[in-house]
Length: 246
Image (cartoon, rainbow, N blue to C red; front, side, top):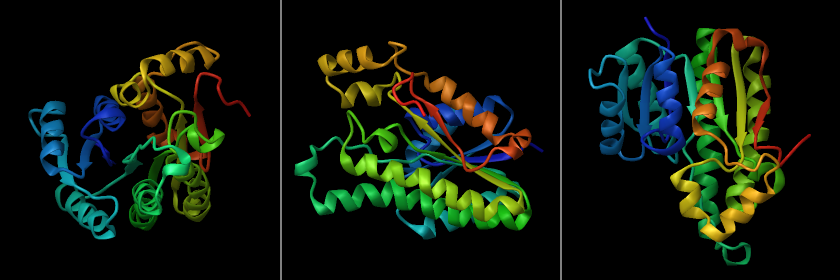
């Protein structure tokens, strides 16, 4: 049987690209999203036969949703091997205009959602003695952000730290935990968030003078999800065209 991979926020955008890459690599893929209807549409599009796909509703702000999703996956497939914590809220509100309520909302989805995902799925994977967790961080969490809001940048920086914490906790049980920190990628979301004139200047500031590739990020997830990736854990993989080097 194929290994089973679950991706949060996978009905569209980067999450959907990741789900497609995993499916192409032979995984059975669980597409989760806040909207069950959108998850089902994405699942049918990915695998019309339904043989290697499952659609589930998962609100990453609710721990009970993670637990219910895990139960549903195990009930259908008998196991779960790979988790990609991708779901995120991206807002670009100017720093001094961010309300405490908006800050909390972004932190709840991005930071707490990743924490609970690592906690619930990590405990299950550790109990089985094997697993791969990949968290989607961001360049914004490393350089303070250029086109996104402070709450988004802060939440993504926290994901880098959470990745290290869970990696240390779960390593002895055969579970690796890594993060990927993309810079601006060629996507509808980036083009919607950044006005054309500002995007032109942003691209000019990227050393390679191009936006990143979502397909490459999907393939990187596949590499980190593989059994051969056992010696890579607690790492944040930078994919930013040279904007941030360390």
